Image (cartoon, rainbow, N blue to C red):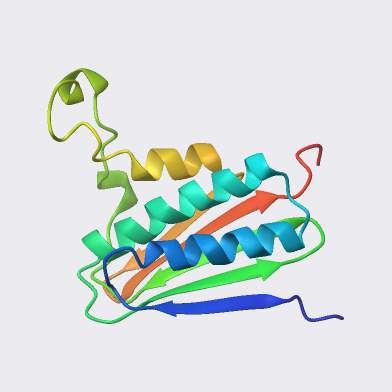
Length: 141
């Protein structure tokens, strides 16, 4: 059995560090010959995932990102060593309450990630959170 190629990043929690993750995602997507549209969707989902980990995990260390490449899928894991969260407690904002407020751009991350990726799974407890996102190479599967 061949080992699948994996790219691993360890990002310090610093301003704009999510851009390192998106640049890596773009290189991986190009290697996999994914469309520009899929590459853009991956980058947007990854930005949201990184910002969530940076802002909400209360992690004092780094965020780890693993890109696992195979013939059919790109699997991305975003791992933090923070406080964890209960996904069922995350409320999708009501658009009416966001219009014309400074908070209108906040609170949409998980919903966006789920819209942009083909599958999304959270594993979270008091030792941290692992977000697993999958983008299929071919949507006809």
